Structure formats: C-alpha cells, structure tokens
Amino acid sequence: MPKKSMELLTETMFYVLMAFCKGAMCGIDVAEFIEKRTKGRILIGPATLYTILGKFEKEKYIVEVQVEGRKRTYEITEKGRLAYTEEVARLKQCVEDAKAAAFERGDLDEWK
Image 1 (tube, one colour):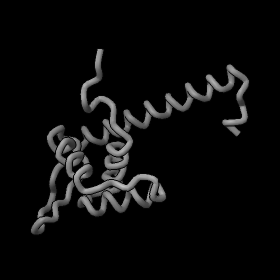
Image 2 (spheres, rainbow, N blue to C red; image 1 turned 180 degrees about the horizontal axis):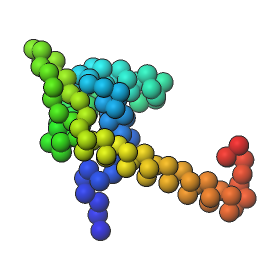
Image 3 (spheres, rainbow, N blue to C red; image 1 turned 30 degrees about the vertical axis):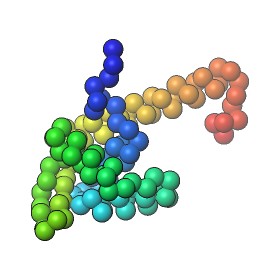
C-alpha cells in the first residue's frame, strides 16, 4: 500500500520542521538554519522552501503568526511537532536496523 504524501518526510521537509522546533521563523530564517545545521550539505532554494511551507500550512503542521509586507513568519503546531517526533523515531529505527544488519554480517568497522 503506498504511503500518503505527508506520512514520510523528505530530508528537506524534516529539516524545515526541525527549524520550526527552535521557534517562529520566516522562510529566510529557515533556509539559514538548514544551511548552518547541515554545514552547507543542504541548500534549500526559495521554490522548494515555499512549496514545503505551503504543504505544511495546508496540513496544519505550521501556522502563520505574523506578516510584515512580503515577510511571513510561521510557527510549528502540535500536529507538526508530532510529525517531527514520529520522523525522528522512524529515522532512529532505520539506524538501529542498519547497525544490527552490519553486526550480523560482521562489518563492525562502519560503526566505530
């Protein structure tokens, strides 16, 4: 059975929610947070970011809290926080499964 579109977060979506866990932010703040947190590994462009923000707002993961001209500030909702927490748990389980598989095949070097 296929997953619903918001059931699993993409890496970029995950980092956007992570940013909002820090507090209310505008899009530029989110992009800067992600770049800094990932040490430049993930650079999110405006089209991608605002598409994600639109999806998150529609799904009620975030809510707009302030508008100053074109600058819109959002904050995470309880639903968004729950989605983030569930994704963290899923990712932890993925890592644990990978670690167990490595131990089963005797490839312990990758976990040192």
